[in-house]
Length: 180
Image (cartoon, rainbow, N blue to C red; front, side, top):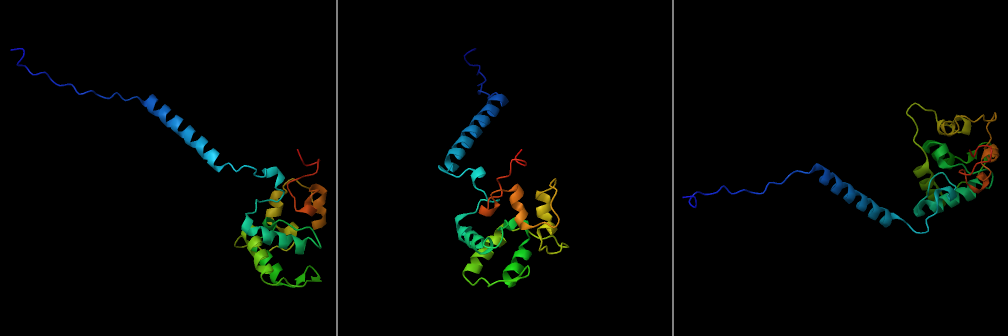
């Protein structure tokens, strides 16, 4: 009769092993991160410390940046677009009166290229903020220089005191006094 008694079939039960699952996910994440790092690593990329400008400028805006520098840096240091809001740059490009001097206006397509560069990299203006036309009135400029005793009045030419490469549009390099 013992042969007639049916045995209960035992289905193998999976023991839950949370530690094994966590280790599997961890290893998978590390491998995927490593592969993504390899895939996105551009050989010969310029290190950020050597870029000079405030932002890395994609190729489609570089001609606009060059035209901006050629036209503005011929009289004074070309400021990074971030210093002023977009509205300031728009008004400066449209007005031939430029801080007491009459300028020959930029013509298209140069003006369009410069505008695309400036509007892309300039900051937005707060709703109740007045449009600044002087560096010392720029909220962004003040935020970038919180502990700097600025000369009165602030002159664009005084940027070179702290940024010795400002003439070359490099605002990342600082004088030894500030490079701490």
